[in-house]
Length: 306
Image 1 (tube, one colour):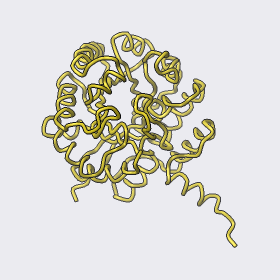
Image 2: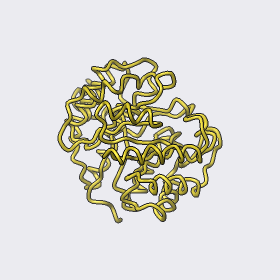
Image 3: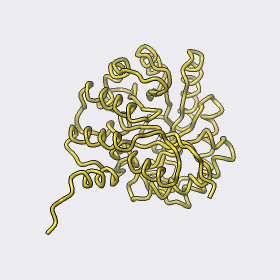
């Protein structure tokens, strides 16, 4: 097995994890979550999204969140932006990295950002070029790489085209998202193999949701190709407002436990990470979606047995 020696985990909980909550989360809680995740050793913590509050109200005040965090040396705090207006707002709040977000499905692209795939790529090229001219790094997202809630199967070549164009326009890393969590290991492997023929593997990331409980299996499959970048959300938070039925992201705690077991370094303190997951779930009024977090909590407070 050709496994990598080290994997970078991109923590998306404060953005992708909270954007599907029914109620807005206080700014102070969002800031504290980001800071705790950075303190747990996450090298990248997505801090918010400069999108319309009419469409994603949970991400309103992302400027206040980004400007309010105590930044930790060596940690990146990217934010999503859909257009030049979002880029300018992000830059004013001190953004040093942004992300643009497209899709490999025409219908999902229309639902999510109200334009076709080709229109979105033209828009993103303008945003990425402007960001780079201002010294701001850009990352790219491709949604629905293993299936779409509206179109069903997605052809790998569509994923390849979108990912390759994002890379060509200057995105340093492309995140491949199984937005509705329908992927299985062989499909994930074949999709990544196809994309890696056009985009360097080191510039690709896996972003798998766990709707059907396949996310860790899918990650194990693509790790064997040498993938070194993984998106995940603390406590398995998340979902997508434009993907009915999609459950949360793969839990960061579960990913770290898997990688630890494979001897792959991450630099993440699992105990501190799990504590952060418990903390945010208490404030959201729910149990952690991470099985590892639940197991660690049970070990700390074992039940009485007859």
